[in-house]
Image (cartoon, rainbow, N blue to C red):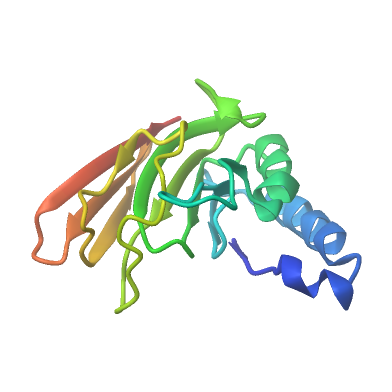
Length: 166
């Protein structure tokens, strides 16, 4: 499932989040696939800025709206982007670290946009890419009892591995 939504559109489409949440819940309920993986652009977690004020750690508007849908729909993995950094956050359920629930990874840097030193560590981060961050990519392998997501630097060196078991 790929989610594309924008909080900024609320002025023109006031019920957009509600319609998208219903669509997502319905779509996730209809699947007969073993693994439920969501791809979304904006990250569900909100990071505070390093070295300046103006934003606190927490959950983004998209996270506040969609994480309960992912919890209820038994999503296995949520891959997000937008912040141009790689972070493994592990399992989060009901907005807290958990033993069950969706596993959250922000997918990292691609292209030429960098935000070196912009984001503070989030209390839910398990792993952050070494800084300054370079281009990286992920490989996902789906097996009978595990999803394995491995992050690599652009020169092919393994950076981090996440294993999601079911």
